[in-house]
Amino acid sequence: MDSTEAHKFLSMPLAELVALADNVRAGHGAVKVDLCTIMNAKSGLCAEDCKFCAQSCRYRTGVETYPLKTVDEIIGAALHAREIGAERFGIVTSGNRLSGDELKRIADAVSLIQGRVRIKVCASLGKLGLEELGILKKAGLSRYHHNIETSPSYFPAITTTHTFKDRLDTIRAAQAVGLEVCSGGIIGLGESWADRIEMAMSLRDLGITSVPVNILVPIRGTPLGSGAPVQAADAIRTIALFRIILEGITIKVAAGRESVLKDFQAMAFMAGANGMLIGGYLTIQGRSVEEDRTLAREIEKAWTA
Image (cartoon, rainbow, N blue to C red; front, side, top):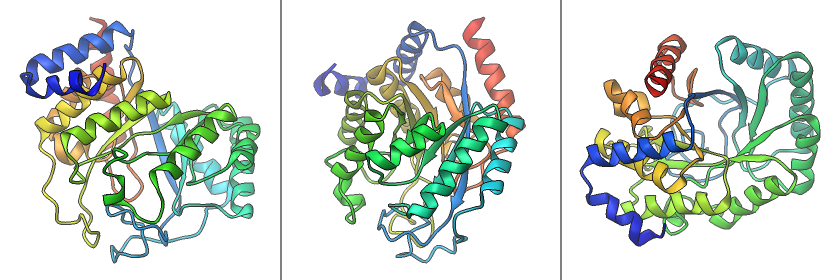
């Protein structure tokens, strides 16, 4: 599918598009909701200028700041992730790069989690090279997370302190050392529908394993803090478009699903999503784990009925 074909779906009635996307999901045998959770292992004081982010030191957002958590704290969070039913546990740090000491601590934590906790470990640690990613792979990391955030065309309007190519370099380096890659982005940054289609096609062409779709939650103090919220119907249409373009790739609904979709969260899964983050986000609280696990069971029941 090329962009011209994809644009035709923008005028399709939403109900028809949702049904089409659900058929694509079913055609690839996705009958289970993939659940993962993340920990904010190092918060705030990031030197980057991403206009949506509460953790940038350039904006006054009141976000909590702290250095990298200890190995024991990271292991404890992994144990909690397993207890709440997550299949994957993600270690996330603020900032564009890790120091050597920070990398070693995370690698040690990953190795110990592999020995003590039955859960797959992912990490989102900013820009890393082949050697650094190889250390994490050897420690037992299975997947690296590095969002492209938006389309290549729109990226300079969102971030100026690093480039879209920087993002691609890290993704390709992670793939080169044998790590799966999770990469997605955010809708509601002021991008066009053409940008959303371009982002989905970029992810498809990169051979990404899992794609989180975040819906902007405006953070007071950031340049996008007073933006108009995404409409629920537009979020559902975006997810459906991503499913049709990305076909069998896992699509996870992430931040913003609670505030934007509200009572229509199940529609995201009828429109092609087959995964979600549970237990909250980096600086935003989600809904209760039990509510999300109940939703996942109901969706899986509907898919296999």
